[in-house]
Length: 572
Image (cartoon, rainbow, N blue to C red; front, side, top):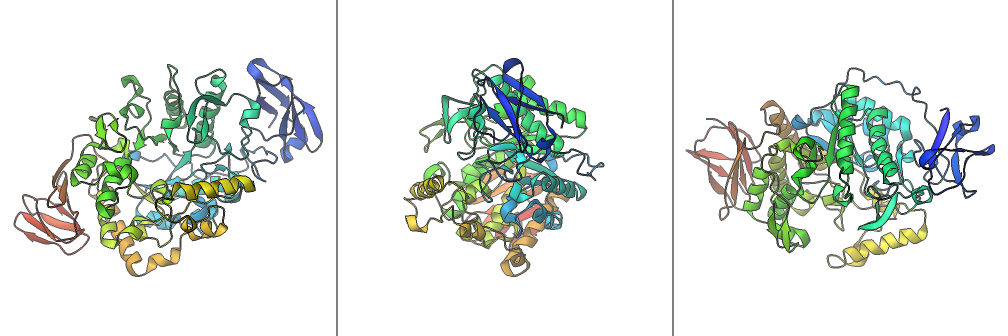
């Protein structure tokens, strides 16, 4: 490191602060300040504006002591990468595995994840997706309240730990996608407003003022976000980013920041010589997110589709509260499997308006689907997984519908063995007032569903501990049975050519009254009984059963399917 720079357009003077004292910085054009780094900066530095209190570098690559302490530079040559032969991962043929670093292993660190990578290889997944790891308050949390977007969380192992994890994944043939948050920063330790107009009250989000990507000063804010994306992808050899809640990024300018981001990431991909993927989370069912830029889209590569989750969940659990009121029929599931999402400018009873836009023509790999993820499990009051709400047969059925779908499937940590542990919402805010506000807010959110005292305290370390996976349980009983089922499904998907397909390459038939559905993908037919009684499902030619979740019988052109059963036929 030879130069320190900071953007602070509202300041008249800036200083770098080290253990040796304060050094004035030179004023440059458009609000930038710079200075040759004093030797002491290698051990830690901060910035002071107009004589004010020292604050961490907004682009700090390392916060060894947490959000409010000194920033540390990185020596790019300090880590020796061994993934020179890694040429990236192919998203359309992949299965994604979402995990939370802090609860995935007993250690709760990047190195702890490495200890279990061989399990993921044996399972048959292709991409590890990490929940956010950017520096956030305290030692434990989901990561969505991060405040130092460039710095890997110190309690997870910091920059060196993340590099070791990515390198280890690549050496096992696993890609790595990182969840990043560009729609807000956390409420504690957010120093960006002191430096410049990073936020605007022109728009409001669920977390407060929106990030300023189209107002005065927004050029540098956009640069901050795009540089951040390239920082993760290039410095840490990542294979892609999952962009949190892009519907909460408000941009009325002619060039949407997501389009600009996608163009720069594509250019970076060309420079590094391997594919780099951008996967958006959006609740709008808007094909523009993934349409190519030359077709008027933003040019992101894929997006989460919650419609399939909601359709499966309501059919298997019977839940109809809140947004689940929009789902619950076999026809909903059939449409989600056929089109990628259900609501494409369709009337939504829960929203009391038409929602979405047709997804016709989008290939299946543009949709990332799941029946469990951190949101759908962790945003329940008690963090129940699907198997906690139903049983093993229905968990097998759900897995088959997702893993054999024509989309990119995603699993959530522990799902593959029906983990007994919940995934609860947990925080570690050092500010006691903020901690109490989070506690009260969580109880208020679920007051109509459970008693307030039954809502786990997010600030209690025991809530975090309850969410940590118990790896030993996967080896016995129904856990081992379910794990074997997931492995067989993933092997079939890979070896039978059932990766995400082009638009229109599959067909869905169903019977609402009889609660069955058949998904036809080439020579393979996925037969599902979505009810509690045995069903005779017509398939128009028996073929051969290559996989079944329970005992099935062939009777001419019909399949006799057990309650909540799934079978896969090939031929004739």
